[in-house]
Image 1 (cartoon, rainbow, N blue to C red):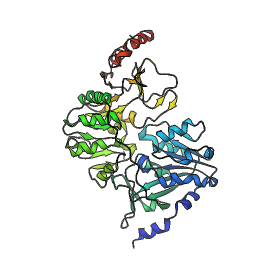
Image 2 (image 1 turned 45 degrees about the vertical axis):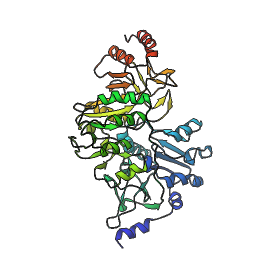
Image 3 (image 1 turned 30 degrees about the horizontal axis):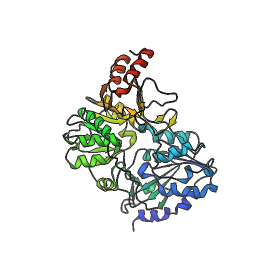
Length: 439
């Protein structure tokens, strides 16, 4: 029996005792998305009486957790969240303060949040999911997310790890040694998965325009959803593509297996898929498990625009909810109502536009609400959040074409965007543009 096995046994405790060991006032930041600490998140509400006020920091919750869903926990718990999903959107609509949004760029999110908590004098805990420990070395593995996990651990007063044998073992900056850990709990659960949406006809039309912009040998960041999935299907005729992305997605497995993604032409991290988290199906989790061709690195590094820009021919492909005629992009709110989050969109867009031969692509359907509303709009409604400022915008794509905006005047941008708006709204947009003095 190794010395590390003995230390493991000495730190092993139950979830109940680990939760009860927390101070009455504290901030607990959990792992991200599929690596969320489900044992803690599903159980903490049961110990409401142990706390005066407990903030729980998370990103893209994939489960429905009572502590941030039910009114009886208002005032005791609050979920500080970097990226809203379905459950947090529902909670935010309930009208009481049990979730809150943290504006951020992904590459700085974890460190900035952890530092702010420490500056406010708050007791900071990191609670994350990991693989079982390797007995001979004493190392756990963070699995499929290191967006902010290591950054938070570096500043945390207490580190609690939730050991789950279902967590994939990943290469990269994913190791955590037991000497850095204060408590260990064992909690086995299947990792959350997400459905793979089939692209609509409109999304396939958008994807066809985007595929025109992707040259052989390009390095890609591809998001998730109908449009990115459609893009991936249309890239099968390309050669020697590389990947430097915040999120590893299902489509990348298919493109790799078909020989489209080779990473051979990458001038930066050649031969490797670089990402900071992964989310998809169990089949994808099995594929990346112990895969030396996929590196999970810190989000603070992967999503730093100056790091991204070191990839030649870097192309970022992100989606939006609306774009105004000057080139401002809103991707995260419906008016003043938070819908999702900035995530890494501005990081990757900026990095791509700084890359030699790079392109920052924003894709969106030309209409919303069953075709009754144009997503290309003269001005945003009050309170709408700008995710990509107009001075950063490069290329916008709808099913009606491509608008290249970088380096163009407001007048030129307005004309280009109207040309890719839905035909039913073009005359109205021109009339509004004249009133605004854009054309």
